[in-house]
Amino acid sequence: MVSTARRTREQPPWIGETLWGTMCDYWDTEEAQKRSKTYSKARLSDRNGLGPHVHYSGPKSFQEIQDELEEKMGRLVPLGEVFIQTHTKSDGTYVDQKAEKIALAYEQNVREKLSELEAAASVVSDGSSRPRDLTLDEYAAIFLEEAQRQIEEQAAYNEKRDAEIAAREAETARVTAEQKDKLEHLSLVEKYLRQTDPQFLDFIATHSSTSTERIPITPPSNDP
Image (cartoon, rainbow, N blue to C red):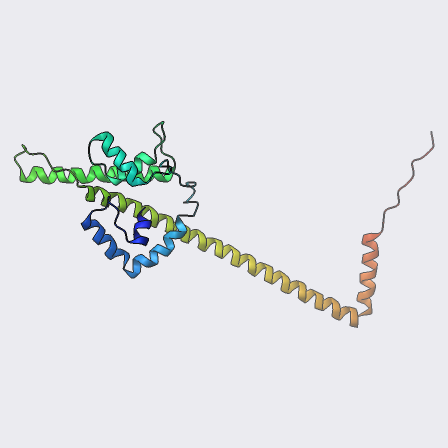
């Protein structure tokens, strides 16, 4: 969903004006464009052994699911909550480990941010007023930050894995080339000896016949 917004530059309803402007400015930077190419590989990878990523949103878009949740709950539903709803099975478990990591980290970050707001409110008030809640933009920013971090971790893992694979392939190619050179060298030595050394030919003939000579089979004795 974020990658689609980045590619089309069409602002989704769940991203507010302030956050959208910040995200567009970042996507236009050279660093972000370079990372985008790297992240595209991460989406198709094995994701550090976590298995293929799935979700339960089906043919519905996140916006449709968000609208349904808001109608059902009678309140605005943040993007992170939509993600959790679409990545949770009926038994309450997550659809995969990656979704669980993102969801748990998001919930923890939300709790920490709310604690910060509560602490800040207690300093400037007499205790009678409640701290403000997070806005949808703030909830979305927290979720997108965690999702971005997970993508960066996956991209770093893929880069390291690809480097290790490339190193192994290079070593295999080196050993293969080395063996080929040795065989070619031995072939030249054999060719030279066949042309210049009769004793070598005798040696080859003797050992070739010895190696192929069959051991005679002794028939069973008829003695009682």
